[in-house]
Length: 228
Image 1 (cartoon, rainbow, N blue to C red):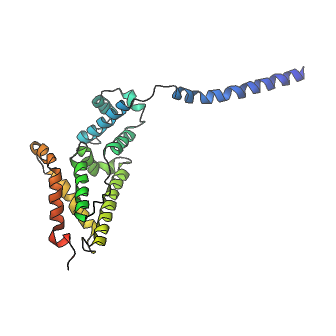
Image 2 (image 1 turned 90 degrees about the vertical axis):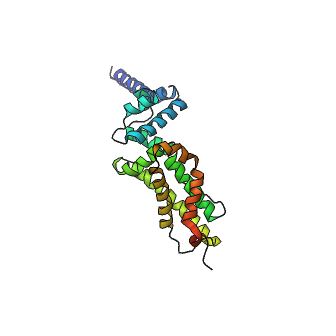
Image 3 (image 1 turned 180 degrees about the vertical axis):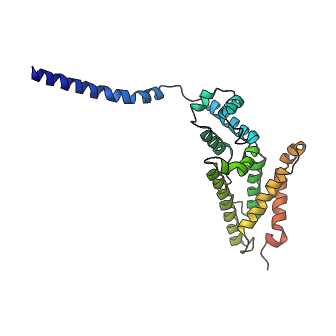
């Protein structure tokens, strides 16, 4: 009788080992067979998140407000992002692009390209969110590092442009990259913030012209070429 009991115990152990992996893999199977995400819904949610943050800031940012703006249910958002912080960071990473280096062959052309990128950032479709980031980043978990990445990208691009200008003889080698970038970026932001709402469309239509004028004023005859 005792061997039969041992045989029964071994059979029960084998049965438990066979059923245990199935229980562990069940959630993965459900995820794989679920309905795929709709890219259009992703896009609407991200745009809504950027818009809500730009209008209401972090204090007024919520999953409910984003869902209402996007015309989706809250469940659709929570299927994609677990928290509102993750939602906002993902949306800003997608729609607030960093500045990149542009080699046009001349310092003036490079700086005009840089100014145009800054104008697109602070006067484009995500302008309110981009400006909010400058003010509220320290209060939002994870956003401060994102703002630091944007700033570092601006500094890196400007430094590369100035170094090329120095090698070509376009600018004095003692030129301060920090001061140049502060003046350029500060001019862009001041121009955008000082524009009345009723003139916003007119200003936006002339951004290329403003970039040219700003860089021309910044360089001028004293910085446009090295002294002889």
